[in-house]
Every structure is written in structure tokens, then in C-alpha cells.
Image (tube, rainbow, N blue to C red; front, side, top):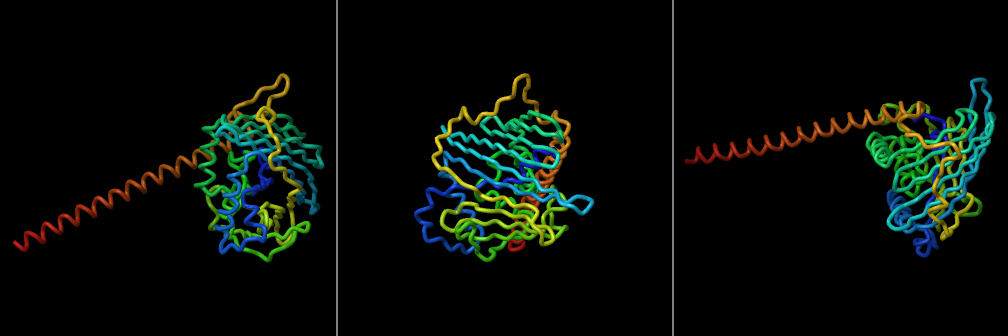
Length: 322
């Protein structure tokens, strides 16, 4: 899944709205730990059922010649919860030195659908079944793949909603509170993520990641206002929160992604740029599951052996007393 559209998707942090928590957050909240902040954001997010988000993206891409290419883009993310199901849509337009790129994704009960159009790989229409999404999402969690910077099938529009962005980053970064800062006049908490040592980077973590990531979260509304990624002290990615509309009046039929005329969605496992990564990820997940199963068997055997040994010892003591 190293295909270009998924790389672009991995640049997007998806904010969470906190309509339900705003009343108690009017004066700001003091959190004793990052986990408390994650819990507060997630609690508020669970009440969000009809929202439209707007983001601005600026990425600096270093070249072999020592120059830097600048990519600019805007994204709109829409999330609707209805009838016990969740529907999400993302539309991204990115300007690059090789021409514009258009990326759309839709997630519903039946899985994930992606449309990509650009000079680098032409046009593609991909579908990830719900079962495949579930397996790739599990791999992302247990193998350490960070939804914040890499997406192993977790390229759904909701991958970075709420505290999941913080949680996913913390798998490969040490996280701490930084000095608070105002973003566009809004007082924000600052979370600083510092890349762990190479020896600690989990199985699916690629090398060459940003050395530091910073998230700025509004103290009153708990919205993600800004995200920056740094490499060697230089900012290479800046994603800015532009606005949000709660109770946006979304309709499910307007979110669904439909293939263009004469086109049809292809199973992502049959796409040459996605298949290899999918297979590799699923193979590693299978290895992990087999390893966990073996450890569980060994644990049960050890427990059974301990019980048997204890019983035998007590019997011997009783015989001795007799």
C-alpha cells in the first residue's frame, strides 16, 4: 500500500468536534496526563454525528539536488452517523510541481472506496472490503503502524478522528505536553511527539520519519487547530484547521463515492501498487497472531503444570504426615 494516494492520505489529521464538551470547557481544562486529554476528545467526538471539516496542507519535499518542492492542498472531510452506521467522505485537491492531484475516499458499512487522479499514476478506483479494512486496522494497532503518519489500510476518512491520532503517534513517538501557544488567536494545548530510538520502532514503522511532530489543540473546544512535522528542526509539513460546521445537514447519498463513466472499482488487492503492501502487512499480522497463540498455549501449559505440581506437593506432605 505504498501507492501515492495512500501516502497523501497519511498527511491528513482529522479534527474532532466537541459540541457536547464545550460548556464544561469554556474556561479550558487542566489535564494531568495526555491520556486524560485523549479521553476528553474521544468522549466529545462520540457525540459528533453531522460535521464538515476544512483543512489546508503545505508540505515541503526535499530533492536530491538540495532544493525543496512545495506542495499545497485543501481538504474537506464530512462525517455522518445515522442509523447506527458511520459514513465519511474526504475530498482532497493538491497542487504539485508535476500537476494537480485529486483524491477522494468514502467509508461506509461496506468498506472503503478510493479514487485517485494525477500525473504520477494516472487514474484508479479502489475498493477495500470491510473484512480487509478490519484486518489492516488490526495490523496497524498490534504491529505499531502509526495511523498518524503511515496508513496500512487505515486510509479511511475517520482514521485520525479525535484521540486516535494522538494514540497512533504515541506508538512510535514519546509524547509530552509542550508550552501552550495561541493559533489564530485561539489558546491551544501543545503536544510534542519525539521519535523513539530506531531499536524501539515497531515492526511496520518505516525509517526516515519526522524527528518531531507537534499538535495544537484548542483549550476551550478541544479541536485540533494545527499540526506540524519537523526533520532536523525544519518544518516539512504544516496542516492548518480552517473551519468546522457542526450539524451540517449532510445526507448519506451525497457522501457515497461513485465510479466515473466507463470506470469501476477494483479490489485493492489486485492493484499492483497496493497489493504488495497489503500482502506483506497481512502476512506479518498472521505471524504475530501465530506467535500470540503460541505464547498463550505456553502460558496455559505453565499454569497447568504449576497446578499439577502444587497438587502433587500437597499430596506428598499429607502422606508424610500419615
